[in-house]
Length: 404
Ligand SMILES: Cc1cc2nc3c(=O)[nH]c(=O)nc-3n(C[C@H](O)[C@H](O)[C@H](O)COP(=O)(O)OP(=O)(O)OC[C@H]3O[C@@H](n4cnc5c(N)ncnc54)[C@H](O)[C@@H]3O)c2cc1C
Image (tube, rainbow, N blue to C red):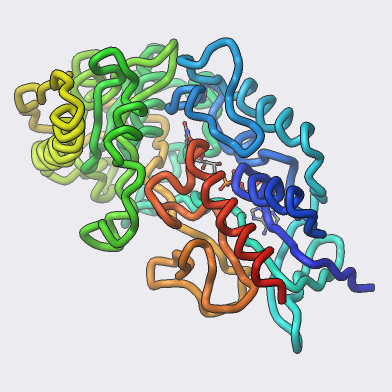
């Protein structure tokens, strides 16, 4: 038997749940189909010592704005999962857990969702299945020999969960830097294969970095303000919320003893090859940071505030271009080289050549088919805990105003 529903939301992470919150306010009949449990990605695809990089005060979910005792702190993983579960419990979204959607098609005038529990017809579908779904591996990743354990960041748990020995961490955005720091602190020799990544001080002029990001309008940037569609892949500034938050970037990691090297190029005959581009990557990251700083400077000028921070002198490091796996004792490679969208089960031609849904304010070209939680969906803040509610309200309002 095929169940029929007005609106089907796919995914019970913050994006799907935020949408559900607004649909409930408008009394719209809907279901939230979730492959696992509420907040499944946070429960199962983060490492043990994960904690938010954004301060608690910036958790801005609809009906669930952070009002706890530690606004300037950074929730650790169990706290965050508990927070999202508690928020969901507060408004009872109609979530069907353990219900995986394997295909989205159309019949004459409805959407048809094929799920692990049978088929569901819906007049409207909101795909909120996560903006960071498919780990992206660099070219030649398959050349790493079998003697070395390979892990994706989402499969890494903690230093004792991997074999003894040195670790090569490939990818140097927030996740890569955080894993490198944790492994180094656990006594591991860590090599960090670095790309071009912006960074920023944790605190400036008495405020957290995220305060400056918000007040300067950096998170209000829209996709059309980016220099190219590829620029959507540039991550948020390297940083950490661990231990109350501190700076974490190439300079701090190098000073601590993590060995910085260039981008991963391949592996052959027991050796890992790295590009001779470390200096350029650091310089490019600094240039991105300096550009972001112009937004801070403009804010200061507008508000008559003192400029809170100056760029440090250049960091000049020449990384090794070859690592002998046996000599260095490298037991493990962790890939933290970013994510790409993955919507293979959505059988509509609504994706660009990078796999991102083509949408305006969450609406695709197919009437009734919406997306939520896409990185840069409307703004830079679209996929984070601060900004997702704003997009959800817009999507839900459009659904309500355009009932099919
Ligand atoms: C490593 C990392 C760290 C981050 N740190 C922060 C941070 O500190 N602060 C911040 O604000 N943001 C952070 N983010 C960004 C963002 O908040 C998270 O990615 C968040 O999980 C996005 O929520 P979402 O609801 O869009 O997607 P998800 O949380 O991934 O939720 C999607 C849900 O859909 C379900 N699903 C997927 N496919 C299907 C299907 N076919 N059928 C049924 N269900 C399906 C999944 O099981 C999942 O529960 C981080 C992201 C990453 C990757």
